[in-house]
Structures are given as structure tokens and as C-alpha cells.
Length: 405
Image 1 (cartoon, helix red, strand yellow):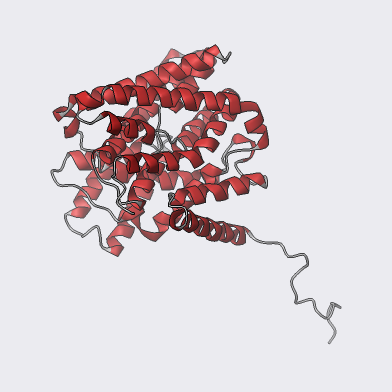
Image 2 (cartoon, helix red, strand yellow; image 1 turned 120 degrees about the vertical axis):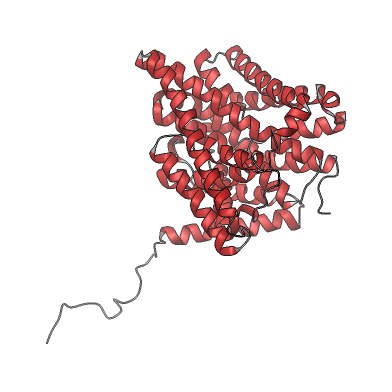
């Protein structure tokens, strides 16, 4: 019986070999892990600097976030990893602290407001259209929860500056989403010509997100009464519940940033006892967080940097001046020293994954408008993705809250 004629070594792989997506993802994880350990052990820097460096290398080969738009797979990884970190952050924020120390709330509100105003005015002074400057200023309010949580965890940081940094970062996230929602409303009024849509969309986002967050908090609270959430199986169950809530959030077009953060806040502030979670909810969560920093580090391109680096640097400098000035000015009334205030202001420097999500949400609604923001925001993210974790670590070392020597 004769079959189709084939060459003698047809069973060998084609040459040159072509790698699958699994190969490239695996190589990225290995390289990021190695560079992260090198940064931590040899340079005494946060591991996330190594992760972000791998992202920058990926972008140098043209494989970063192409065209300024995240594809659905990358967006899913970013949303999942941020959900874990924001839920963990929210569960550490005790709002009763603000009632006992109202200067903390004053610091938070003033810092966010001055950041918005100064970034807006600076961009307008550089010739940016006012509505574009407003959108960029709204995004600039946010500090990176991913960087703050990861660096604090890596160096076992604890103390006044660490706790205030987590508090202010969480509140900044809320303010940034609120400010961005107002930008959405303004754009609806301009582009759609409907004030009903302009008012209804932000109300729907905030109200719907609050409902989903409350349901998630209730489910986790009920689960904790029956299971030890530090148990491995319970951890997987908790992770699944967060991911389920995130899926519902995305299906309902709600805020993937507000839901996990608000759920954690509700848990923490409806219970007297502190909530303790496994770091980033185990190995799977750790991999997601690593990939978040690789993705955030890959946002730069020669085109983006050439077009937007000037405005990106202007955003970084103005934003940092605003945040540091307010925190230092109100440091003594709020109960810390000026040195601690300087460290706290420096620790608010990072902005990465959260800014990516806020920009992506804007792109999904008004892509042409968002395109005018992409180069300046991506340039700022690219710089702070490497400089931000170093700034947080240095800030914690300034006040001796870095517990790894």
C-alpha cells in the first residue's frame, strides 16, 4: 500500500522554528522573575523595577501596547491584577481614622484638588486644549495602588507613612474615577448633545459599581464566618469571587477600579477587626501582578516619546509639586513631621496601571478624543513605571519604615 510521498525527515520541526504565544509568555515570566530578583538582591531595589524593565525591553522590540490601545487579553490581565490589589488596599483603609484626624481628609482633598488644577493650568499654558487638559488632569490625580501595595509588601513596611500612603492612594483612586466620570459627562454633552446622558452615565457608573461592591463585600463577609480565608482552598474561593464580581462589572459596563476598592473599604469599615489576606491571593495572583508591571512597562514607543515626552514630563513635575506641597504644608497639623511629609509626598509619585485603565475607558467611549491624550499619558507612565517604585522605596527608607536591611 502506497501513501503520499513525504521527505525522509518530515517529522522534524520546521526551520526556522516559530514560537507559540505560550513560549513568549513563559520567556517573559522567566526573564521578569530573574530581573526582579536581580534588582531586589543585588541593587536593593523593588522587584517591580525588574518587571517593568522587561516591559520596556518588550516595547523596544515593537511588541508593547501597539497604537496606544490595549488588546482585550492585556486589558483582562490588567483588570484582574488591579482588582486583587485594590481589594486588598481597600480592606486596609480605616475610614474611622479620617473622623479621628480630619486633617488627613483635608490633606487628601487638597492634594487631589491642587493636582487637578495645576496639571490642567500647566497643560493649557503649553497650548493644550482645555477639555484635553481636564481629562489628563483627572487621570493625573491617581497614584498607583499596584506600586504602593507591592513595594510596601516586599519590604515589610509599616508605620505612619506607610499607612497614610495606602490611605491617600486609595482615596486618590476614588477621586480620579469621579473626576474622569465628570469628564465623561462633559464629553457626552459635547459629542452626543444630551445632558440626560451626561448626567445618567456617571450616576449609573457610580451607583451600579457601589451595588456590585456591596454584594461582593457581603459575600466575602459571609464566607469568612464559615471558612478560614487564609486556608489555600478558601483563598482560591475568595479569588474566584473577586473575579466573578469583576466579570459582572465588565458585563454591566461599570468601573473595574471602583468595585474592588469599594468592596474592600466596606469590609474594613463594617467590621472592627482588621482583614488579613494572603499576599496577592497566592501564586496565581502573584503571576497576574508580575504581568501587570510588564504590561505597564511596555507602554512606551519611539513615536509616543518623541511626541509626548515634553508634556509627559510637565505632568510628572507639576503633579509631584502639587502633591508634595500639600502633604508637607499639612504634615504637622495632621500629626507627622515635615520629614515624614516629604516622604509621603514622594511616595505618591507612581502612576501606572490605574492610569492605563482610566485612559482605556476613555478610549472605549471616545477613541478620537482619547488619542489626543495617549502620547502624553503614555510618556508619563513610561517614566514613572521605573522611577515610581524607586521613589516609594526611597520614601519608606527616609523614615525607616523599610524593614528589610
